[in-house]
Length: 277
Ligand SMILES: [Zn+2]
Image (cartoon, rainbow, N blue to C red; front, side):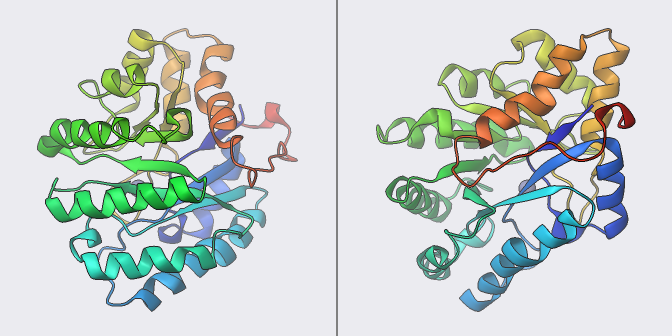
């Protein structure tokens, strides 16, 4: 089955990973800008990272027949430095016209601080002014419920935000409902240690149906599994769900959401679908 991974950090992954994803049916993926594991010291550090996301990774992906898309921002962890954040946001226009840029992300909250909220709102303002889609990171574990609520309140307060062009990621059982009810898209992240598992994501699809729901691996430099979306496909099959339902979640929903960006010029891969997982 073809699938799209809407959230994966390929700068942290090997060429072997790219090849495995292609063999499993990954037709396209989208890579939001995130925390590198250390705080970058200058706006030039981000400029180089954005070049990697818009110049280097699309080539690595294309070498195995995968289409690579990306999102730009300064992430919530580094947003504690408001001055640097403002400089990074002011530099983003240098990259907005690059052909694989879908929008602004992953912006959001980490520890739900005042500075994170300030920088989040300035990113939203930027996205609205430049008519960009938004991809949102919600906090982990004990900060998740409160942080998700704060993010939704800030977005709902701004009537200019088109909720059908916003994806709220890392939702779990206790946060998925308010995200979907407010009209946003929701992403479930399949992680081996924190966040959702393939089985919990399948439970959530069974409870809420497939509308505006996606799954992603968020594969990065930490404990994570870049082939988590195929694991979800297998779990759904094991439970007897139809090909059409599974394909809607892992392929058609991402196509519909990303298709709202003029930069998303998708063509199915050369690998025959029957040859994938
Ligand atoms: Zn991420």
